[in-house]
Length: 279
Image 1 (cartoon, rainbow, N blue to C red):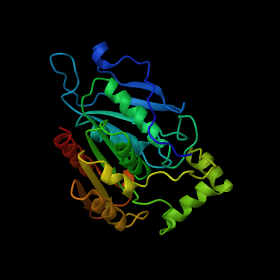
Image 2: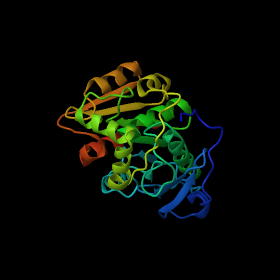
Image 3: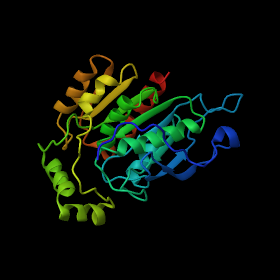
Image 4: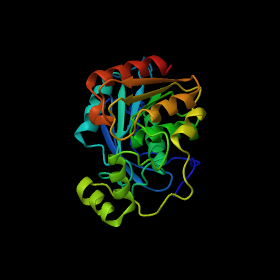
């Protein structure tokens, strides 16, 4: 099920804003390198155009949601609204989630979904791209930056695991039951609108902690709550240690897990950090 970076990413047929002269929201299905249709939304946000009509003066944030999320979930839309104060925003549903095609591989081939969204963001005229991922999406942005060198200008990983197959908390044991058992996958499909692939990883993809050293010199921010019920603090600390000085670690007091726990003040600080670091 695992795959390295593809040779190319198919582009949307929607004309970029730099050609159309508009700054309206766009929604389309992006084809990935392995043929999955990914439901994607572009919002211009706080974009300032230069004299040539380019939207390069502000970054575009490409948001990678957590497992069982999708582009229309209220918590994903709230994140998008907060980041839109700092630039344009691309949100999308990972494969197997929402209206996107395919089946979730729980962080493996999802890197191809993110690659398609990043390529689309570039095609819309943005010179600076920042990826922001939460939980499963946090692991995906780390792997994407390591595998697709030179495609992003800053990376923010929120509530991400450091290693695969972690079962040390009750929520993660429940998640593994959902992913690995037929009855669990039924719960995922009908209870969470998430279609989960039935095959195991083969080979096992690059882990987040293995990916982090390959991201430099791209600016990296690791954010984690000290009340995260899924992944304890040894996960973000391992990621920060692997960054070997080129990444920043924010341990947020009282914060739980992923998008639901990321309050507007934190999202504003993430937006400020990204604008300052993305060049």
